[in-house]
Length: 248
Image (cartoon, rainbow, N blue to C red):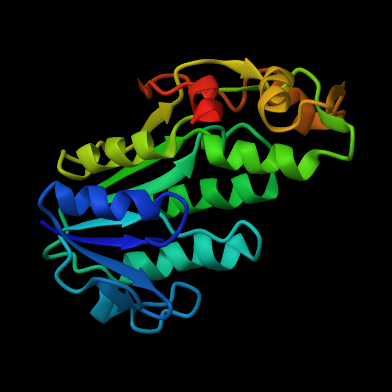
């Protein structure tokens, strides 16, 4: 099938694009510059060249996001522009890469992702909203950033289920060829952990002299994640564990 991937050069896209190609799909990577193998130019923030970039696509995997910039412009308004630009006569399936907990965790970025989901549900397009938990590599980076010399402060009682990015890409590749669900599906890692436990395992491998300090996070955000707001309710599970990621 003719597949367009937005965000094809990102953390997930770098694994997703080759897996889609290995599955026999013709894949175009959409970005603002349109560089790289199979690159096409299309700008979600402005709408420039979206029509030509999406022309003829049978499947769109919408993985582009802007968590560090303005997600309301790229994730929400950009998704509206995407909906307007797709070739409805050709489109069979639009998969949106979202995050487990966007409907329960009160973060501004999560609210934007949830709003983008609502845009797609109201679009009349054949959609599947794929909520995925945090990638191992992302958690690894966050813990490295959080470390302050000999101390590694982390939120107390937060519960998560991180997942391998390669397995997430494989799961999306399988969904791309399936019928649209018309709603939400979830994909998560095989094990539930507290963030403090993740950090202790991380410190043993990455920073043996660091001491993990679990600190309470007050307010609605802290309560939501402690109460399981970032955990999946249902859906498929990956197999690669956090310990395997650290060893790898």
